[in-house]
Image 1: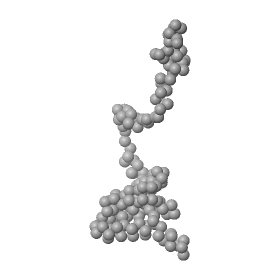
Image 2: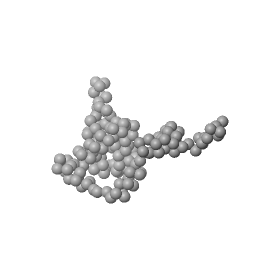
Image 3: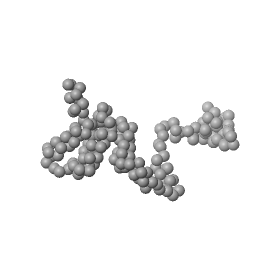
Image 4: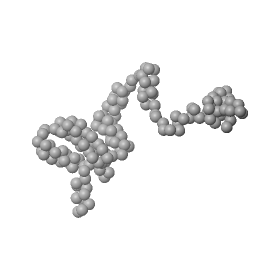
Length: 161
């Protein structure tokens, strides 16, 4: 019965989530919880069951917002996908309508602003790359693109040493 007890007390099961929420409401002496935080996922429980239980708590007015921590990002993304497709749309035609409502067109200025904001910041050697041509190619022309001379490079032999 140890295995049965373990699965019965599994933190991601619907029964466990609802019971924990009810106990928290009782201890806090309140009607709702502003932020119900799941500290870790139960890898033995399907994510659909966990998200359905959390959705039911929100719909019942017992919880306002859900938070998740100590869970891999890919699992949280899967949970969000499950929540939006299964919970937000109960039938395939509802899902199609929801996705169609998201269709929007961005102007060139908006796209440029998004590209600028989302441009990655690269570490040390990447920013050095454009200047590296003056060290490695010192004034030569490669594929029609001239490189600059390093400003500290001696121009004449008598300037050396």
